[in-house]
Image: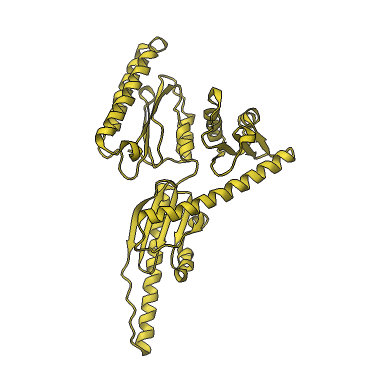
Length: 353
């Protein structure tokens, strides 16, 4: 099962338009608040796939015999994938499956943010819910002291501890003289090795999962050395610091502290983008607001950052079209959660030119 969702992968899916057949896109909500037990998940899967079968039959008059048979096989293949043991493991809150037998397409994506269960049959994969679910990017929280490190990853709502690093660092002792100084140097060297090892583990995690933001927490005397060992790519992604007991903080403690840090980061980022938006609108320059102007700029490939209010809804599939065009032109998508853009009908854009 392919787990990671990246901008490149989303764009590839969005660009896929099979010459034959239809694409079946199935989204399954696995939020443990609603589907914590295997029976609850099994019932949700059954209901979802029954809906998929019904939609296939409703398209009966619009499909060739071969395409109809292919979709039926795709429904069965999706059912097999969703019924696999461990589908909800590792903090998974939502699963998306894309299938089109005639095009050789079958991809499963697990995400750590809840997705609304739905079935879509169309000429292309329906990726917009994934775009919106991952708009804020994945986060990593690194807690480290002189001998231990703990690493948490996921979305702001669902950070989970994924790695732990413990190294053998000499304990301090009180013996004086030359041997004490030599021993202290050995301790310091062990600490440096531990922090370098920790930084290496985090960078390997970054290469695998591609998280966008990093928060660190370390004792005051250690935080500078920890930052110094981070790869430049990780230092570029530093979004803040938390103060926590590295070894004894519970996962809930980490989520609460990280949540405050993430919210503050998002507020700053949104404010900076909205300031650019208002300046561009006032100067008649690099900004657009409202459905018509933003869609027009997206069609022309001029959008640098698409701004959507949380829960944005508009008739005619506007949100879906906007996110699809943003993917096509490699524009960023930001769901505005901490400010109000209702005066712009919930949709705006900072432009490239």
